[in-house]
Length: 573
Image (cartoon, rainbow, N blue to C red):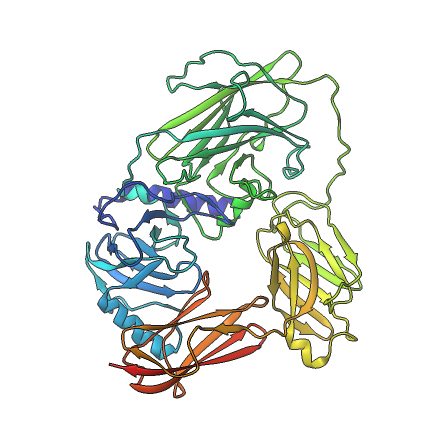
């Protein structure tokens, strides 16, 4: 599996020099970006470049090359209004969070939405349906989906493999003449390879409140300016660093390359030029997942198969030197253009008063499946669900108020990341759970930082089965609460002209909104939903008849609870 991934990785990288085409910038003016390729994000690497737009719906977005619209995806979350253009060069450009599409695309989209009777859609137009020419305005920059402000999220993908590629390889430039900033360095001691989440000590050796006695700046000419005071370690250690590329507004974390040398040997090398979306979640093994800190943990856990990490020596770990010896460590951070910042330090062994922790051997490596069975619960983890070795761990608790499972369980620790879905089965308490309420049952997970998530599932007799990617305290609860629909309109009909919109707010606190439907005289009409604000916007278009009408909003959650709300209107031309 690892070799196969690396082979594909190599093919993609080798394709970059074959590109001789000239691409158009996707926005008229390129300045600093608000997000870089490879930025550290929640559960994923940033897969493109973010270009700020000047207001919502005011900045034209341009096609970077000739091609055809190969995919249109509209969602209340994620990329919001997204457009994919396939080019004859073998690559596909992606434009996300758009406010709107140009007239020909918008008309095509609206026709398809009315055919599907759905605002959200993921469709693939034919090669001749929506032809695009280089420089054509394909839409306006916006703030749709999971966006924190108006901007264009832009990607270049290999059309064959769907891997996302660093856009700067295609000639899209950003203003960047400065080296990244290296904000802090820590040495983290751990019991050994496969125990990276169990640190024995953390020692900050460089940072804003630390003097320069432990590290020294590096020079690109290779000169070693002066020796620093040795840093002592008693156990294997890795370097955890915080850095930022100042080409991005706000100092995004997207460092293009991190290289760590030990006595001129490569200890760790991270270079992000392209990646598969299936691999992006490996970021949880690269960052300090338990604290959520956006820092780089420069070691390779045995379950981290991310191709852009190379750790040929000790999986990135610095081993304590022998008595009387030292190791010279160099840490380099580089941006895409080769601007570099680095610091060096010397490591010596601490052989005085060493505390040898009592570390129990772990029974399951990341490549081993885990099956846990009890009278009240079962859990199944496929190989490569975890990044490090572990000994299976769960605890049972008596049910608390609202629980309809026979027991509550804590599976592992909420600060432990899972790379893929695992299965969990809980036995229901049939004395608390009436047959009529079985369809309203959800699995509640109390995860990291007390965050609750809810997961639907299926029944096999009295066993409820679900799949999730987070660990924590698990129990079965009932979701019998209807979604909420609110608006500020009075009961009597409001006068409104075509071209304007009706606004309502819809929400569901547990299982979440599965679908909504807006009708006039039992006829479906288009309405746009923005999940981050819970706002539902109903444009008064030609599809809404003139005169007095009742706009009916119906919302259904994932377990079938539904709510309806009527807004009386008097439509004017």
